[in-house]
Length: 518
Image 1 (tube, rainbow, N blue to C red):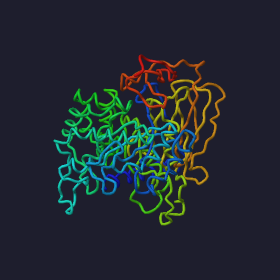
Image 2: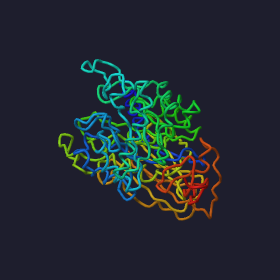
Image 3: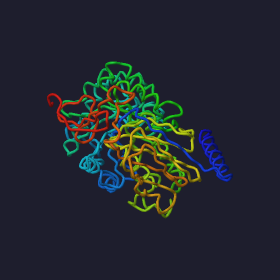
Image 4: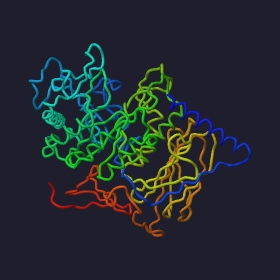
């Protein structure tokens, strides 16, 4: 709570300072300088397909239809689903077979649609089956009716965990869904009274180090293993895996959530990303909901705070951002419940979806570039920025929460010959994302753009290759970033084989064939 009060007060004082300057005739001006230093490559953005607002679960695919795919208005490409430990009806564990009795069918229709639109789907266990656990139930055990017994994976069942994940992969494949990744556990550090399982960092290390080889990567080619996803992206979970050479070879993606721990200011996510980049691992933020406890639709200021969180995740080294529910009055698609406001229309895109589209439509597949601004940036600052390169484009983002218009000067590392901007503001006519051209008469490295108050702008410039050769990267956070490789669905590959897409240091890309195809 103190953090929230301090953040609010800082924003109020900053806004007052800017307004005071304006009153005395000082025009607000901000300069953003982009350099050619390259950091992580972004795999994409998404949300969770879980029970709750996705009702009736299993047949309701409308949120996915609205949100996913390049031709959609929002452009999401990653979907998270629960690997439920619950049985269907009266079927017991003895009946487990290729067509598993577990309650996994609900995500299939949405997952099939995401895959058909070129997206990535991954599964997260909320708990292993209850028969594998110390408390004998899939529940976390944190209430009196469950005996307040901590639910953990029994040591004598460690060898059953990955074969259980294989049954999930087999089931989904039998339904026409090739799963791209599976996680160890949802929030292993949070003792709950719903479906959950606790792991210490050492327990997770023992499980991965000694048994992750049982994940059937040969049958389910391309499936990747995601670390457990701690509540606040606590780096002691991921660092334990990455510091062990055996476990490190098994883990492909480091993951976590942001509850109580913003991505930049306390170091959790940012610190985890440093070691992950060293070893060529991706970093995914796999769950967070902003303003989910309010009984109204979020204000425009709160939407900008969400934009800042997305931006800060990118600055912290994140390669994938997955929000919580797709449909909720505080999420992307309206629920139709009038008690939250007249704008909460069933199956209508909400402003937060359009904020997300700035990143999903433009940043997916890009590589982040270094930036600096003439004003303070980062957590609790009124202004934030980031920049990216993708093919022939340089993408610059600017988020400002104050009630004062300003001039934004952008200094680029290469000359550009044309540009467009996507602008979202609190005005009803533009907040859903307005596209306009940026007038550039001849190749330039500096552009001045007029920005309205409380706005979020994404500026996409086309590099003038004939005018300004692109030099090699000055520095990277990973040796893998000089040349990045992707499969034909746009998923990054650490060890490329067969027909792949190669992204080169100059920002260009090409299809090439590497080695023998397995």
